Every structure is written in structure tokens, then in C-alpha cells.
Length: 343
Ligand SMILES: [Zn+2]
Image 1 (spheres, rainbow, N blue to C red):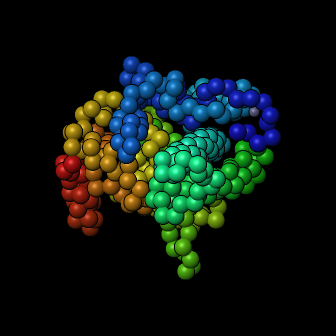
Image 2 (cartoon, rainbow, N blue to C red; image 1 turned 30 degrees about the vertical axis):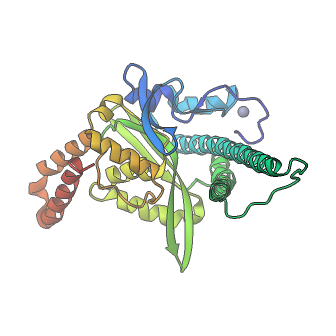
């Protein structure tokens, strides 16, 4: 994954460091992660921190790049953030390549089986006939999978192209900083995420789609959250981070990343188990759906304890609110409603 390096990778590179953000939320060395168990059926699965979030990534030498902040357990400098975002992008490239390979071999097997089916059907009618080739129009499954492959390839091009290039230029050569917004939040969240979200937007009369590397990295007493994009989408990242800075924006954005962004996240088992069953189902349904992107903030709570803690803190400071009192009370009502949102 490191450009120009020909050495083979260690077996398990971690997109999220196991002794850092994963250990922080693990219970008995395990975390939960959304995982596809059958067609369109998502469940939370238990996974050990040694195997969570791994991909065939870097060689022994380049693994050391991340040792800088892994050994201290604190991500604190611009370089650390860029390294973590780089690792996220590399992990996503590996996942995307793997997904494309899987889809392509699925499609090939399907076409072979379909050919066999028609060949056999023709033979039962006229045993002397042979089919040389077959052309089928309007096969929904085929067009569905083909369009998935096309989309995945387009994302892969963007990942391997400008997103990788801009992060690599900074990490390898200390050139131009990447387009990355980082938040240091004064509370710990019980989730870790390393993945991609997307944002669609209009700017200067044109439609754009930005792929955004995302990270949620809890550490003792605080959480680092970041969102990036290729530089040509900088105006969008700026707008998004402004939304994150007001009211419950950061919490809302992180929950949007979990529900409408990446499915590559991990949660502390007892946090998930404490959520009411109907809400768990609603969360999993939303994770499955591709209708929304990270611009829409969910109306349902995932991080209940953090939300309660923030609401209590805001209420404590209400006497200082002055003219903002009504606005703040409205936010509190909205945030409280998410704790009891129906399934
Ligand atoms: Zn290497």
C-alpha cells in the first residue's frame, strides 16, 4: 500500500490500531461490528480486537510509520491525523478492491450458470443442437451487479487517485497539507470508525460528489474525529465542519457517519446491548440503506450515554445562555427525542 515499496505486507495491518481506539472500547478483548450475514441482512457480530479492522496493508518497515502515535496511545499532531487518514484511505482501497473482485467473480459464475441453464433447455428440445453464445437483454440481476461494479470502480479511481496522492505527498515528502478537518472532543465515545462517507453538493452551478475519509478515534478522556476530502472539495469540508461546531453538531455528525457513512465501525458490546431492540433494528436498517449520505443527521440516537451527558452539561449552563435560551431549549428537545425514537 505504500507507493514504491515492493516488500510484501504483514498479514494484518490495522486501519484502527488495536491497542488504541479498539482497546479503548473493547470488553474482554472484543467489540461488535455490523456485518452482512445473509442477503440484505445485517447483524452486529462479535470480533476480537486482533482481527478487527485488518487488511493486507503495509510491510514491516512502513507499519512503523504509525508507531509514533500508537506507542503513546495519543493522536495529537497534524502528521498523526494525516497518517491516520492515510491508513483509512489505504484500508478502504483494500476493501474496495476485494469487493470488486468478489462482485466480478460472482457475475462470472452467474453468467456461466445462466448459459448452462439455456444450453440444457435447448438440448432437451433438440439434442443435436449446441449453443455457441448467448446474449440476454433485460436481466435485472446482471444489470444490478454490473452497475455496482461500475460505481465501485469509480470510487476506487478516486481513492487511488487524488485522495491517495494528496495524503501521500504530505506523509512522504512533507509537501502541501491534506484537506482534513480534525476535532478533539472533550468526551470519550464508545465507538471507533475508519471508513468512507460521501457527500453530494452543488457549487457554482455544478453537481459534485465527494468521497470523504472519516475517523472516530476514542482515547482516554477524549475523542478525535476527522473528516477529509480531496482538495477540490475543500469548500464542502469547510461547510460541513462549520455544522459540526454548533450545538450537538459533532455528536450528530458522528452518528451520521455510523448510519449513513461507513459500515466499518466498532462499538462497545455493552453500549449496543443497552439499546432497546426496536432501535437496534432501526439502526441496522438505516446502515443497510443507501438512500442518505452523511449530510443528513439521524433522528435516532446511537450514543445514548454521551448524549445524556451533553444534555445535562448544557442544562447546567442554561443560566448563561441569555438570548440563545430558546434555541438551546429547542435543541435539547430534539436531542432528547432521539433517545426515545421509535424503532
Ligand atoms: Zn513498505
